[in-house]
Length: 215
Image 1: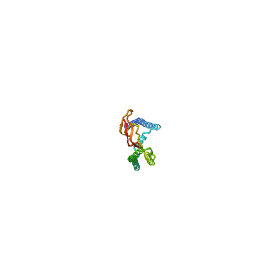
Image 2: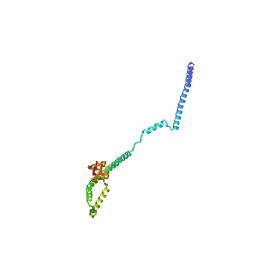
Image 3: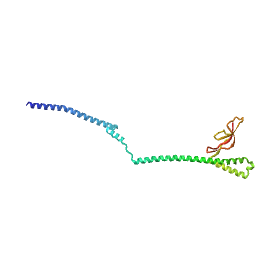
Image 4: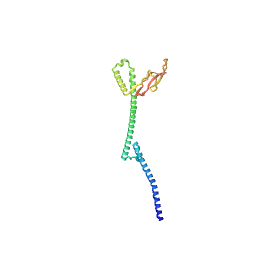
């Protein structure tokens, strides 16, 4: 009988212990459910505010890290385009250099021809200066004068112009002083006489003027 009573007492104690533990389990279960509800509410608030959830942020980060690989054909096309643009730029530079060299060579050749023609012009001018007024009226002199005018017009069309000297201030870039003179006028560094006419070809000196300068 005593053994039966002891068993009943032990069973009653176990029930009491189970009853005491049950509220604790219910409390823990309740707290977990509340935490889940709070997380859901936070996610809803973030979505409403436009903020991404932690999972979405992870997916975005993964997406940004991965860069799409270029196709080999696209890489080849870009390489060929780059090479073509470089070749075009080099060709343009070569063409510009060639044009400059051609123009420079043409100017050098033109100057050499003009330098050979100028002495002929000088002789024609000296010849006319030595003629009298009656001789200038002869048909022969008039014919030579027409040839002289035709020659000077052709030189002007090519860009050859005479340098102004007499009455101008002496410029060593244009004039070559072969004589100096002095007087009481007080003027200095003035060209008073021209012995040989100078010429320009497109703003470049072909021949300097030979002049007398007043000191």
